[in-house]
Image (cartoon, rainbow, N blue to C red; front, side, top):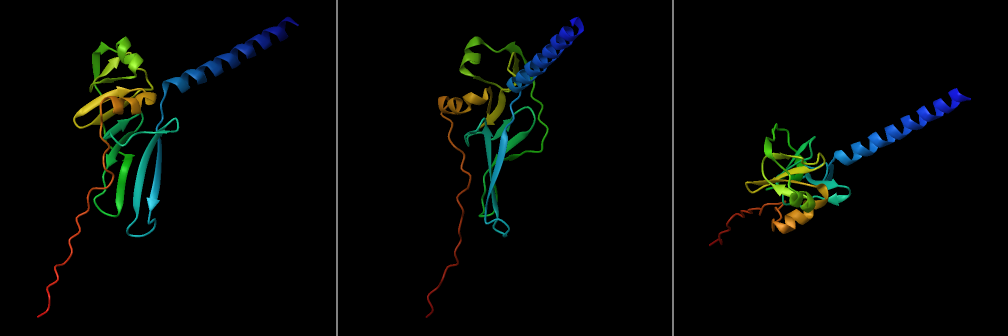
Length: 172
């Protein structure tokens, strides 16, 4: 009887430990969801529109670069009827330097701080973003509020297309 109770105790401990590890993992990793939609798919005028989501919420179109600790995404603007616009995977190496400073209580409560260097104490699930020569580390839940607080303007997905029409001369 004593052996059975020891086995039950060990199994209960193992299950609670595994569940605890899963919970910690879920809280320390952020994975951006990359969705692509198409216009005129399969034609020479095909265009792909990239969107990023965190926990079902769209990342606003205000950042030139977004990094979630696993992949980099850059924002593209289309200048033709075809091609890519929005957020797409960026194949580049970017090493984010570490700072000697620590995240302050105010920055932690706000959910973001400005800077190109990652401060010690930055939660692992925070995202690195860049825009107009600026950068920040932000909690996924604070992306939209940070963009609003900093009055960041949306990036156009399509540049103004220049249409050059041939000049018609009146026949004489």
